[in-house]
Image 1 (cartoon, one colour):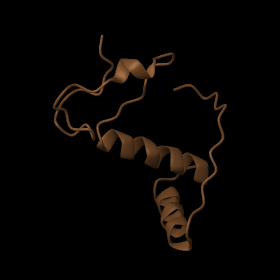
Image 2 (cartoon, rainbow, N blue to C red):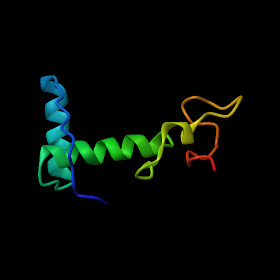
Image 3 (cartoon, rainbow, N blue to C red):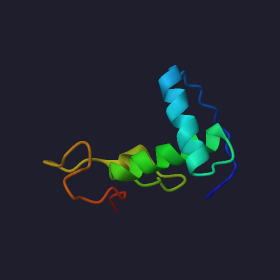
Image 4 (spheres, one colour):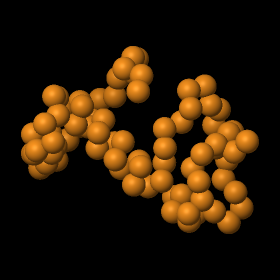
Amino acid sequence: MNEDRGERLQIMLSEEELVLLDDFRFKTRMPSRAAAVRELLKRGLAAEGFSQAAFGAKSQDYGMSAGSDPAGRDGRSSKPKK
């Protein structure tokens, strides 16, 4: 994975969300809250059938087929179309 992170994302969390995040962080021995958020994001996207986009891929490469489930849960690949 590319460790060059050039984008910053700021989010606001409730006290309960922060407690859950910290619980996850310490249970999984993540080095920071940011690392825990990245891991949860990766897991959530993978659970929904999304994989990491290839660097330089264009949004048009990820078009939807007629009749496909917009959430990607219909068993079709989330890989870019050729």
